[in-house]
Each structure stands twice: as structure tokens, then as C-alpha cells.
Image (cartoon, rainbow, N blue to C red; front, side):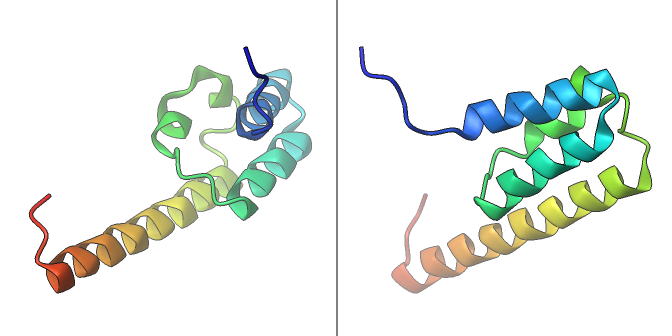
Length: 89
């Protein structure tokens, strides 16, 4: 079995663990790295109990809002591509 070189899951886990431990700066550091890497798995962040410690913080809300904007932009781009190519997906 090959070992994955994709560190995305490790970065997610580190952000989760640091948030749960109360080390918010480190949690945000890894969330920012994920954002810079273009991580598109946003749904988990809204329900993950590891983020309960920071869920109501303004910085976390701003982070989630930024992710929502990026996700919506990507949806529009896909919709435009579908329209241009007349795809029925």
C-alpha cells in the first residue's frame, strides 16, 4: 500500500487538535495553510466538535464566511462552464 503524500488530512487534524486544546493561534495557523492550499472541504468545519472551542469567535466566523465566498465563486464558475458547454450535469 502506497503512503499518500497529500498532507491535507494531517493539516486538518492539526487544526482540529489545536482548537480542541485551546491553542487557537496554532489552529488558525493550520486553517490558513489549508486555505492557501485551496482546500475545498468546507462542510466539515461547521459541524466538527473539535472546533466548538472557537466556533463563536469572530475570527472563526470570518474564516467560515471567507470559505463560503470562495465556495460560491467556484459554484458560479462551474455553472458558467456548464452553460458555455451546454452540459447537463
